[in-house]
Image (cartoon, rainbow, N blue to C red; front, top):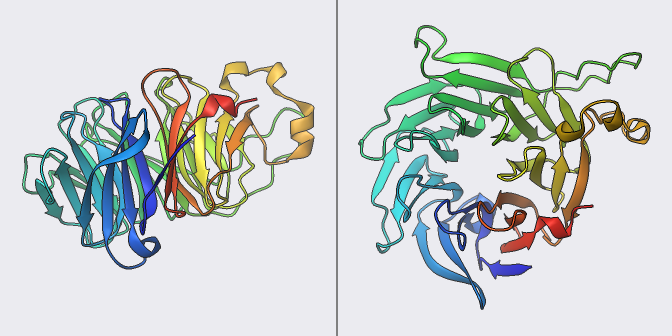
Length: 355
């Protein structure tokens, strides 16, 4: 396990470069993001451990970062002052572009993985904005009417956008639809809906709505989305059946889940980072759907468990909230990076934890 210390700054987000297997970006904030500066680290994995290749200081906290899909040296940040900034790591100190349209903290930025010429930002002000890096202003605004913690483009379509927020709903927008009254909104799925009961089984207990903090699209199954948040449960949904409830429910975390990410190598595997200071690797059960997946011991052990998924392993080396986790796209499957409020970035092999 490799470690890097973000001295004086608490990590909020970590992302592997889509171009280099040895480059990682970390968005961080002083004083746990409550007040003070932010710092964007660009880290290199070397034979001598993790080294800081570059860092940029910002006037306000940084809550998220994402690499450009079009330019290997550029990356975006989401700022606590409502700004979205584009940095080029070949240049010194200042961003090459900065946009200031959001009225509250920006909590997520995400690059379009298919078209590669647009990106989005989502904010506590209840909007998602779509941008072109060459345009001085946003090219579209999608109202969500809720504090939006996480937003993303589908990795399978250049025009489908999803988000989750404080009202416990997963929203899906399709930019190909007419703007009209719905502002491209095509789906609004209540995350807290209990799953459909199994044949002959009692209905699962109902759950109160809770803030959803994170979500991610499956990289292989283009209609499957994972969500997680304050109620400690990781859920997966199939947007072909929006009213059917979750297809898998994965209990286990002891506090809120701050980040989920599907594996780029395995269609049934995802990873989560939580305020319980652990990062956990899960199978959603899709690879073994059917009677074999229904382990009666699991069903007796936790009434919330649904869909045949299970925890494959956990990494408990963080000593404060684990806030960010990401998979490496390259090389042997299973390498991950995580960051947290303990001012540390850890790089580790999930396969070593999987049972």
